[in-house]
Image 1 (spheres, rainbow, N blue to C red):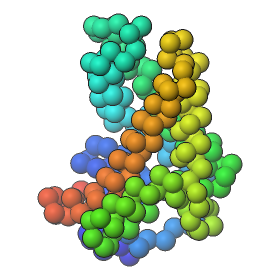
Image 2: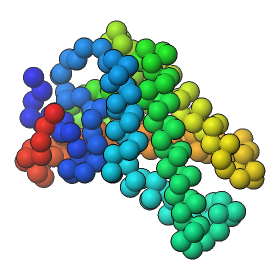
Image 3: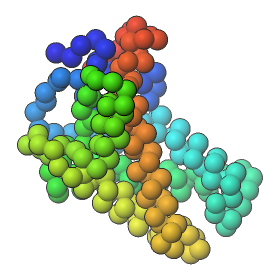
Image 4: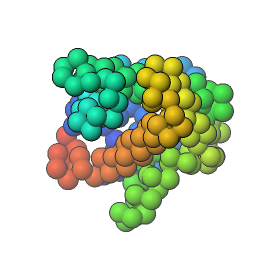
Length: 204
């Protein structure tokens, strides 16, 4: 049984999905193919899945990262749908398709103990280290290859000028970076919830 401080909730702040985060010291059976599909679908089409694409689209428009999209509301719409498709394809490749083939567990297992640096290092390392379906640590092929494949697929719907190696690598890096930040949030959310909300949000 996880301690109160290490207890994950179904959502972060009652809004953002936290379905893949496993409370500290909790042992679960292998993740089924159906569960991998469901988590990818939740992360892609939950109402809160609009927030990150909306934010990233705003940044990309402000920096005029794709001049062909232009400015204004129509331009923002182009940035948004491209970013949303980026996120959705990455979710299904990283959380469902690749891990089904490689038999990797896509859940985040909270460390929950130790100092800040130890836990931060652990959470960020989950980008390259994950568990397989047998419960052993393994190289995170799903994250690295899945995000890379999603970035490659994006070349089919981005303008010609964006189909360079550097732009593709940038989209890959952005996806991995967002996932790394998500892992960091997964790790420390139980502490934040316990300290500021007294663990009142619904637990898993």
